[in-house]
Image 1 (spheres, rainbow, N blue to C red):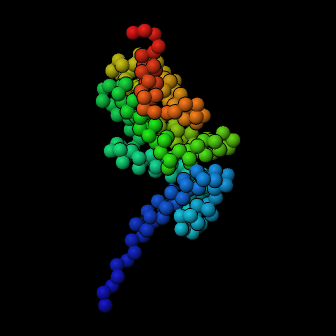
Image 2 (cartoon, rainbow, N blue to C red):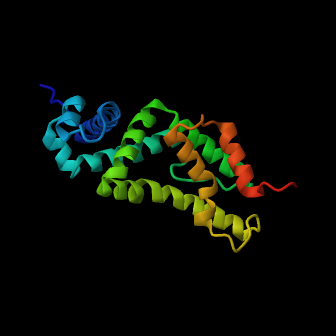
Image 3 (cartoon, one colour):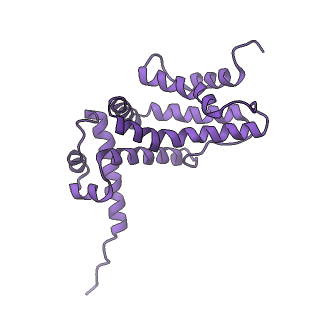
Length: 204
């Protein structure tokens, strides 16, 4: 009698984890954060509620990790290392490239609906808002800080500029336009933001 191989628990766990990520992101986009529950995520993912609580402490933990994973998957699909801003020596080109990728992500239906739901909830839910900033936003902003400091080292950015403030010249307008839908976001728009931020509005 041929003995069957033991089940691959690693593969099974990864499949369940992916299903939970997808379910959490889909649900929060469809019904909003307050109505999203661990029970609902479990049912949609086809797993037991105890499976979720074995890996995460709350629905916020699930969603934040799902967002991190979504960003990593998008970066890998684009052939880029996750959480990295290129440093080709051309600051404008590097910033334009990463902001174009950000636009693509913001307009991706898989990302847009849950991102809007979490952003809205973060305005009224202090704990979620803090976690969203700490776990998702700040690590991404730090990449801009690092790239701008590198540009300062090469003389591409003046040495007295505060990178943390400087990055807001192109990141904040994009975020505001996307969140409030004041106008379309596009590659041309973010390219212009970079040009304005780096070269100013005075005649050259």
